[in-house]
Structure formats: C-alpha cells, structure tokens
Image (cartoon, rainbow, N blue to C red; front, side, top):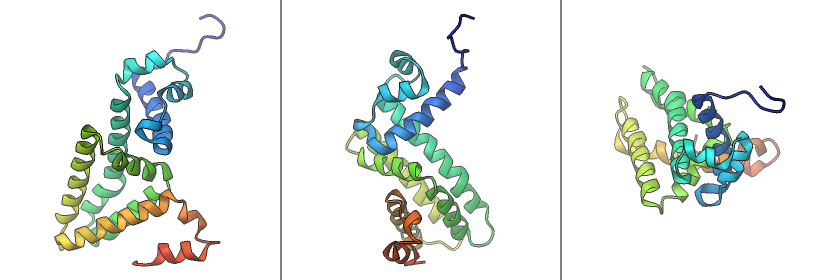
Length: 182
C-alpha cells in the first residue's frame, strides 16, 4: 500500500457511513438544501463514488428515511406491541428516547416537508399509515385514542426539533409545554 492511501472499506460499512452523514446533512437542510458534495466529503469519498452507491440524491434521502423508520420500529413500535400492560406507555417511553436524538425528529419533519415530491409523499404516507394502524391494532386502543397518541407524538417531535427538552430546566414555558397533556 502506498503512503497516504486509506485502507478499503467494505460496501456495507460505506453505506452506513453515508447514511450517518446523510442523516446529519438532510435532517438540517432537507432534500433540496442538503448537499451530496458535503455528504461525500464527510465520508471521505469522491462525489461520483457516492452516486455509485446511491444513484440519486432522492434515493439517498429515502434511504435515510427508511433507516429512521427502522430505528423507530425497533425502539418504539415493536416494544410497545410486545408490552402486555400499557403498550401506549411503552411506545411513549420509546418515543421519548428517540426524541433525545434531535436529528431523528428533524429528518421526519424534513420528510413531511418534502412531500410535495410524489415519491417522498408516497413514502411518508405509507409510513404514517403503518404507524397509525399499528397504534389502532393495540389491545384496548380505538381509532380516537390512536389519533390522539399520534398527534401527541407529532407535537413532541416538533418540541424536540426546537430543542425544548434541553431548555426545560431554564425556560418555564418550555417546561410547561412539555409537561402539558401528559
């Protein structure tokens, strides 16, 4: 190996690196504002090599959304569905953990914001429907309760995107806002 050359990275490890960098970029700047040049630089690959792995910027954005959906599935939905007592409480606890990862909240908002694009709209529609129907399918949860739970989650997603949990100790309004409705 010549001096200055980095060791090769396997494709799966490279995908993980790209998704992590893309989450950071897209969560803050959105589909249209996010830069694939910045993502490639963050991962230390050439811009053309990025497009060998993800053929379009939109494909990469959707991959980040799908990764986020998988995280939500693993950390919130599945534990709630397995909970014998208080499945909504278990899901709310999982959502609370996810809220600590501000970029997760931001990428969801960016997904909804990019829903003017028909492909993104379909992705967000399918995910939202799946989550809502999984809430409805929980024992002793009706459509109205599922709606209220989903709406509360969206409200807390917006709060997390504004960084309110970190401000609650010093900002009385942030504390009241986060505590209300619970």
